Image (cartoon, rainbow, N blue to C red):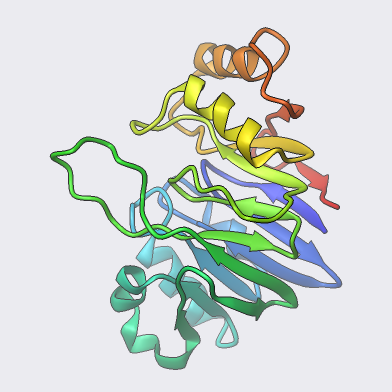
Length: 213
C-alpha cells in the first residue's frame, strides 16, 4: 500500500491500481481526487469535507463512491446509492481496501461548542486515520496518522495517544495551520527531544509518498 499526503488532513492510499482518498477538505488540492475510486470522510468540518470538491469529482467520475457519517451523507443525499452512511463497528470494502470504522464523536473543543460526529477509518488493519479525535482502535495499528495540531488537543495529549495506540510508526496529518516553527516544535516533542511517544514520528510534506505495511 502506498500512501501519499496531500494538504492538511487528506491522504491517498493506492494498491493494485485502486485509489482511496480520505478527507479531501477545503485545504486540500482537488487534484488529490484525480483517478480516485472511493472517498472516505471522517466528519463535516470544512478542512475535512469540501462539498464543492466532492461534487465536481463525482461529476467527472460516475463510478466514484463515498463512505461517511450521517451528517455528511445528508449534504450529499441527492447522490443516492453513491454515498453510504457508516458508523462505529461498520466493516466494508472500498476501492479494494477493507475498511473498519472506529469512533463516534469529534474531540471536545470547548464545553460550550456543540460536538459533531466523527468516525475514524482503519484501512486493511494497517493504517488508521482518526479524523479529529484521539480514538484508540482495539487492534494493532502499523501506521497511525496523527492529527498534530488543532484547537482540541495539546502535544502532551498526542504523546500519550501514540503511547496508547502503540503503532509501529506515526505520521503527521492535520498540520495545515502550522508554520515552520510550529512544525519543528511539535516534531521535536513527538520525536527525540520529547519524553518518548513509543513509536517513530515523521512528517511527510504534501505530495510525498511512503509505503505502508
